[in-house]
Image (cartoon, rainbow, N blue to C red):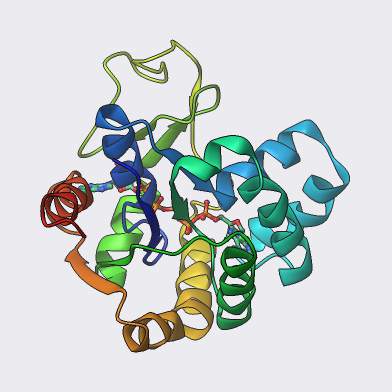
Length: 218
Ligand code: AP5
């Protein structure tokens, strides 16, 4: 399967979870701007030091930094074989930059998948989310707990709560989403690329959608 898709949806809609279920069956590169930024924060790079305070407050990191980061990432060899973008673009100016970049690379998007979910479900999911600090596996103390408390089932790494998964920051992230990212729905609807999926269903609903897209020859 060679596809180029974007996952859009509020924080906690399940973008990372859906991407993981796709990767279990298909070798598609999952590019999450949040994961790349957190890696930079951990490594203490200049980008990480600048991004940290915005991430902890639930604000967007400056477009210029994100675009430079994504230009570099999408130019890597593995991305030429298809990708799932998670967390990028996050506003209309990032979407315009992505269009330019894909034109330069003579690539086209297959679909933009919107994961729809209510704010109340988001707050419940994110206050109970835990992630592995080593491999990034995603858990939930209510719906998908680890077998041993605080220990990753996949790699035995330490399972933690993200610094931005506290209710006041989650509410801020939601308000940034509604103001900055939601306009992308109309942006991609006009390009006939948007597909809506109920994010309150199965964690492999995007995988099923992609397989149906492939079966229909796109
Ligand atoms: P980022 O890491 O992208 O965070 P986000 O968009 O807020 O999304 P999340 O990772 O929180 O949620 P998700 O949708 O992946 O949900 P998950 O699968 O984990 O960004 C973090 C920060 O980085 C931003 O605030 C910003 O500062 C910065 N940033 C990133 N990109 C940027 C950009 N382009 N421009 C500027 N700044 C940027 O699932 C959540 C929980 O729900 C889990 O516990 C999971 O187990 C559970 N769950 C998932 N699916 C289901 C289901 N179907 N049923 C039941 N439970 C489910």
